[in-house]
Amino acid sequence: MHNKRLTLSLFTFFACCLMGLLSACGQQSIAALANSQQSTTRTNQPAAQTGQNGSTRDNTQHAVQTVPMPPTRTSCPADGTARAAVMRPLALGKSSNLVYIYNEVPVNTSIAYGHLKRYDLNSRQKTDIVTSGINIQSAQVSADGQWILFLSTPDPRGDTQHSAILQLVRMDGQGLQTLYCFPAPAGGSMVLSNPAAQWSVDQKSILLSYNVGKFTSVVTLLKVDNGTLVPEIKYTDNQLYSYKVDFWLDNTHAYVEKSGRYAPASPIELDLLDITANQGPNSVGLKKVLTHPVRMSYLSMDSSYDGSHLYVSYCLQAADPFDTTISAGTATGSVLNTIYHQAQTVCVHDLRAVTNTDLLMTVQKYNTSTQKVDRNQVWTMKPDASYQRILFDLPNDGSNFSLNSTSQYPWSNLS
Image (cartoon, rainbow, N blue to C red):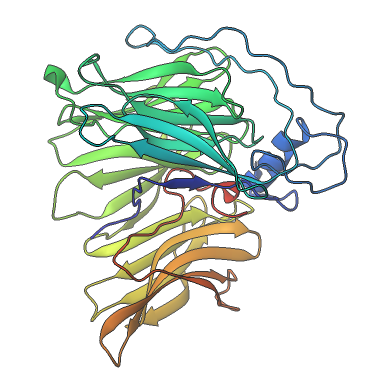
């Protein structure tokens, strides 16, 4: 089973201290970009202070003052268009916060609600941020910790034209606004068209991906400051493959995955999209990075903290019972070199590069004596596979666990 992106109804987002200004291959790394973004919004307080809404302060600038939000619109813009984001600064506090999705279906009713909530780790108080649609599909916190970008599902009884709504809200719950509405499949069917959105670290670009009917995949760039939509990919085939954006490498390059639409799962292709070079949906704007099997397996990929490498974790479940290999190659594509291999007893499900010296993983362990899976754990490991450390055990009760499946940024997976 290819389970690269597990979906949970309860979804967490952390913001953590990003250490160091790193660069490689002539491109700024995610770490450097995030630190640069944060430096424009922090207060003049002691260093390394954690912001109220889960963001880390470098505290080198003058105090940010909260500016009231002007009126914003939540209705859908005209089909084929988007809106510019209306953004005003928010002064962050001192407590670490966890932002999560809570989708509510009241008993014995025909209604449902999607909620974004915030949990203060110090006071243990929960705060409602916003309620939108009948559920919230995914969400991600901005690099400066002030905003949440999310996809909500409209009630089909009132809107049959859209499968998802791209919305933005400030961390204090102010300024809810709709930037773009994803079209519903032809015929008004509310079967999801697999909408997805990925926000760049500099908060200037959002890559949108979705399917149109059974044959076409679309990837479009939304420019946050003016609402311009720029076609990047429009791929039409014989129902076999589709494209979606996985994650950003830096502010101008993002990984795009080409995968099979139907079982049995065919190998995926990972390509690198350059938004500055692509000349339209039919141009050759993709660079092939790798091809990898996914059938009966867990595949997880992430760029290194400094943006120079790509890590690939692959657990083959049809290997009596497990066989996990973690490999690394250059971020733009090269031969993968194995850095870790463990047969039979360890299955790595998710992998994230959360610091320059640490990989974070969710792991399933198989007991050869009992011939059963008896541990679900969270590990850290050095990029050379040394210093493997078990952080904690997860309940072994049949529940599914994953790292953040919407955003792979370090602050979205580790606090």
